[in-house]
Image (tube, rainbow, N blue to C red; front, side, top):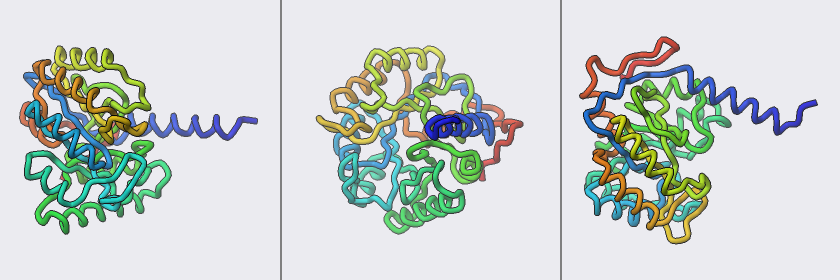
Length: 270
């Protein structure tokens, strides 16, 4: 008899495989130069105050994936940013992305409940910043589930996952690859340098992600020193540093024709 742990892992592999292979919206990557995007999930105040300042020193701006139901609360990644932090970031040229209102895990949430939380997050943003709209999304916690991935593809320009790799040659706009700089991944500066170099050589799109930025970060965050080293190296690589939405727009403008649909079941963007 199989153990519950083995069964859970098997189900997880099946979910990941289905999410990776189906419900795709494939876009070729034909940028004249590589693109690197820096993203912060949840997003704690340290990501704005410390992470944002590091990026700004190198002429870059971030995408902050927000669960607005967490706004101002204390969490495992530190205190979440305030409404004024969001307003300042947008005014300074950074982007706000959707992370569901309640920071929900797609694997363990009914699709209808998950999508209601996405809509609620959008409504909360309208109240905080009239006229503002989320155009990009990042999956919280376990990642994508096929039914939710397909629904999100009808709403957002692009949706970010994980995978610890870059987007090269072509990419699934409904499940973009990203590399997390978090302590829990154990990713080394050498690995990041190699990944940046390879992305620059292949003129791909590298999305880097983390949560808090602190001297003693959570398992989901990184230190200011590490982030600065990564941003500095990225800025010298020849890549352009763009928030997620701006990177998407740059790639689409470089492609002719526009993002194509994968025959396995992609969705047109509204």
